[in-house]
Image (cartoon, rainbow, N blue to C red; front, side):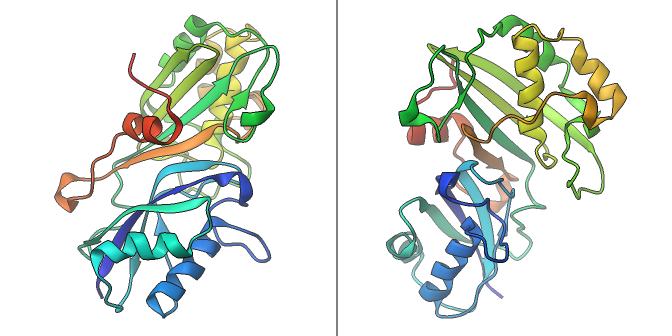
Length: 269
């Protein structure tokens, strides 16, 4: 059956996360309802990463199988006419049946935007995280360095996490300051449930000097979620990019390009 891949951008603040739930307002429910109208047949989608309630996406990749025939350019225009204002298709293209939005992915990149000021800004409270304690960038960078590589991230997974293995490989963890804002970029082969939000909670503890950077080593070794910091709020967390093998021929938009396009923040130093 023909397979299509699509990239979605969405404001997660109005939704109960990506995944379909009984009696819940989710991105997948809304997207599949519009897809079914557009294609005139029931449709089920597979995504690259199931975002939590309140988490945004700059480029969520999904695939679906359908026998319906539509012009390629109409996928974007037609679906965006039907979709709620907080969800938009960025591109759509046919892919081989060997492509899988989740299992074909080489890496995922998340970006946390955190405002570090004494007073919060109500105009952006659903778009950025906020912490009023002064943060020490060097301490957090030292802590972040200890998370790079292949580790057991049990101390940073939720109790509800259903992943078969807690082993993940952190390819990059960067922190940049932009005036009153800090941009935290996490790139890994995959993430556990609440892993990014739990890592953020720990990094912010170190940044406030509540813990030393070496605490990260202790948490990785302990493999005990109860010893780590509280889960940070979802506001300000974005699924920014998903990387696939070049052989699939998908549009190659970096996390930095996606962030600049949709938020105006630059990841370049």
